Amino acid sequence: MSRAHERAYALLAERVRLEDRSRRALYAALAALIGTGAWWLVVHYAESEDLARLAREAIALKLHGAAAFVTLFALGAMSASHARRGWALERNRSSGSVLIAAFALLTATGYALYYLVDDATRPPVSLLHWIAGVALAPLVLAHIVAGRRSRPSLKAAPEARGSSVSAKHHPS
Ligand code: HEM
Ligand code: HEM
Image (tube, rainbow, N blue to C red):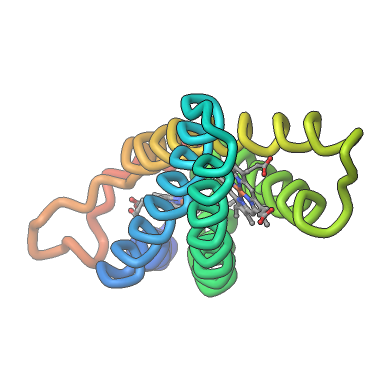
């Protein structure tokens, strides 16, 4: 790879990273999303008294729906920069694609739970939705770890943002 290409690669690689504020916002939205989903599961499976359980489930779902909207907004905002640049650099493609597939499944089954299901179809759709939901945290974690490992080593040397990229240019 020529020096110019190395430099371009290094700059692009830097810009795959989410800015601190966006990253924190995304983590907060994901924590709220997963937390409220888990809250519903605990209430649903641990509480026996019907009326109290239904009331608590309703609160959890109201907050879950709000967290879902915020998460979808955050995903949309980051997909043009983060996912597109990462894809162009051939870094973290497989775990990134798994994440996008998981979000697509969650969104489709979430929509179905709200608008489409009836008494017969609700249990399997619900099961599919929350299993994908519970799997989301380890998937995101694996994506972050793999992404960090695939980072080109931009040494904090004078050339840091320039020519000396002792890069692992391997797709992950
Ligand atoms: C972008 C991702 C997600 C979206 C768009 C989404 C959306 C939704 C929607 C619209 C509902 C139906 C709400 C209602 O009936 O009032 C729902 C229910 C639920 N979600 Fe999510 N959700 C997502 C991620 C998650 C995650 C990560 C979990 C983690 C466990 C989760 C767990 C649940 C549970 C347990 C329910 C209740 C299921 C039921 O009513 O039978 N969801 N979700
Ligand atoms: C095919 C799609 C995707 C690709 C190619 C991709 C690529 C990458 C790469 C290369 C990194 C490492 C950045 C670095 O540390 O230098 C990374 C980190 C990360 N990715 Fe993705 N990603 C994709 C989709 C997603 C999605 C859908 C999410 C939503 C949760 C996501 C969230 C993150 C987060 C939170 C990090 C760690 C924070 C950071 O260092 O910026 N990615 N991704």
